[in-house]
Length: 293
Image (cartoon, rainbow, N blue to C red):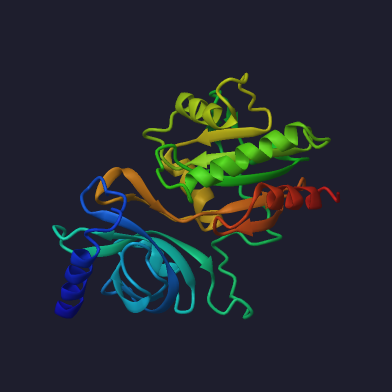
């Protein structure tokens, strides 16, 4: 550990004259990291990562990284490729650690992964739910019967461009395309917030309008945003295998995974995206497939 601390001190000194990294509100700096998991130690909350070059900070190498979030240990396995944020803060108990971890590809992608019956799988009927949308109206899975629809999870204060911001950009772009197509009465999109304390229906309406275009008349006929109590949202999130928890260092932020799913008009799950490497075109293609188009 002393050698790693010394190494980080040297790196910080050598990179002092380079372009500064984004400053973490809680102190320190943040850097984007990609790499492959070599081993994990959930008991010590550390993982050994063979990472790529961290631009503006350090060369590619293999080393141990502390990870504070508890939910990652169910998903983080040796061989998985990840993206994350490296937080460097010499005044913290850990001078560096990883946050906002996303699984780019699962380990041994060609090897079948056992199905966990607690989580949604292709072919399973979507669990019912009761949430409140941006107009203050109750919605449930039954409201989407007969339509091809997709669901994703976000929270309005998420600052990360590759997480909630990308999910909402993709959904709003897809909504525009659906509205101008022959499928406008056959498709729907739902973004569910897991931050009920801050994401009121009114706030979600304003948030969604910002993505749809503030100069346009707000039209949520295709894309709805919904929220519920934690007791209402958690079972739905669990069904799709979504993990989220309040950031211990900033109570206004969440550490979370990503899940986006496509559901057929019969209410069956037909596709699950576990990351952010999908596009509106990918989503629309999957939605059309459920309609036999």
